[in-house]
Image (cartoon, rainbow, N blue to C red; front, side, top):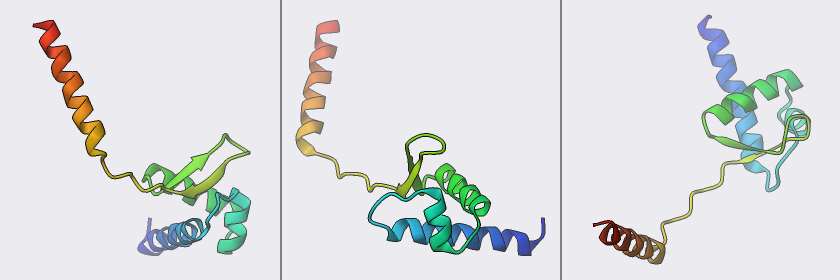
Length: 96
């Protein structure tokens, strides 16, 4: 594979990622292709690659899937962490 092919793949993924991240709602693959100015095969290959890299999410099954940006992880909740520690300690005490 030449450097030109590698660069082209990265630019296709970049275009697709920009379209998905700019959309407030999940998009169908053909909508992403139309907005990115690419053909469907290029778009699906890029979306699958981005899914493997955990940069996008797929909602739904094959042929009906919608593609969305990856949800930001929620910050940890101190109350849940405390309760988890208490329950874990209680279970350890019961076992001993």
